Amino acid sequence: MTTPFLSRNIMITALLSSIILLIFPQFSYAAEEMHTIDLTGHWVGYVALLFFVVAYIMVIAEEKIHMRKSKPVMLVAGIIWAMIAVIYAQHGDQHTAEIAIRHNLEEYAELLLFLLAAMTYINTMGERGVFDALRSWLVNQGFSLRSIFWLTGLLAFFISPIADNLTTALLMATVAMAVGGNNHKFVAIACINIVVAANAGGAFSPFGDITTLMVWQKGVVDFHEFFALFVPSVVNWLVPAAIMSMVVSNEKPPALNETAQMKEGALVVVGLFLLTITMAVCAHNFLHIPPVIGMMTGLGILKLYGYRLTIIDKRKTVTEAYDGQSTLTIEKEATAKQPFNIFQQLERAEWDTLMFFYGIILSVGGLGTIGYLALGSDILYGDLGPTTANVLIGIISSIVDNIPVMFAVLSMMPDMSHGQWLLVTLTAGVGGSLLSIGSAAGVAVMGQARGIYTFFEHLKWIWAIALGYAASIWVHLWLNADKFHPLA
Image (cartoon, rainbow, N blue to C red):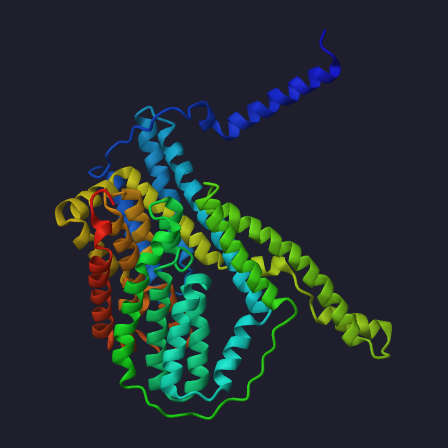
């Protein structure tokens, strides 16, 4: 005899099972293999490619048309997959498109959560005054223009592997602008140096650029193997920096009297960020689980510490306000000075960029399902060979954003040695320095130093940057020659 309690449990279990199968029907056919259809010569393939190209032109023209880059690619991603699903359904296959989409969503989810944790830490360090304090120290020292040129480049190179190249470039550009003042020639050349240095520094670390993060999370290159790119990355920055420094004056502008103090817990947040990165590395290397688990655990620690900062800020605000004033006045002043709120730092994440990644990953994934990535892989890596192809990838990334380019390469998964995977990681990371629009760092600094650091100012030095690009590739081919063995 079944008890009412047992019957209720059975009913609940059955209901939950039904819901799970309704929401996640792939569980019922997870073992089923995907049978893709080559649509490269079909009208769907042509239309999908056309839509993607038009959307990406709108992304490139973001500054001109004032439309956020995530909007066109998100729309096109949905259209591409809807057309693919219709064609597969006409062939009696209602599962392949769904399985492919879920695979792309899984890759995006890992990237999204990883970046969300990293961005929250960066925003919190900014809110606590870490970056303001560094900038204040630099502009108050009275360094010469040439010293500032080298210092900002050096700091951009070594901070970007941890804080990412975009944030680092913006920070160092504010220093160059503060010291350079009306000396627009210096500010422009210092910004070029900063962008090149930030991109080069981000190339030898899984945390320095989105492309390196994607390569690491895909498991193509292990964490410690990225450091084989350190010397080539240094060369990539030093060659153009040495050339450009020859035209930088040794003039010593007056030191600025700028003060900036870090808030309570600023250094603790920096320490927690380093701990979080360590946990991400350990999760991947020792526990063999996705590094995003380490990042999200670290975000949980930051949120707990944020609770402590909130209490401290509230007590401090009330203490500062209390000087014999009325209770109402104290409450008004305490309300005006908002205490630390970790969710405000989460809100300040670059959501347009995160949504752009969604559109790109789903769109490129759709083009891959159509068959274009396999076709591109045959042309690039089959006909031209991996070395030429990987060098071209870097040049292409200076025109087209390196994120879709790298995701396309990872989706193609050409059969390459470790040395070649490191080469494409290097070229995709530093190739964007060839043009000011070739990297997120360059585009952001153009917006910050509007009218001073421009596309054409950067273009004047493309020859020097190209020398650094070529030199870094040559150094990698020579220094890491053992990694190009077929078994490497």
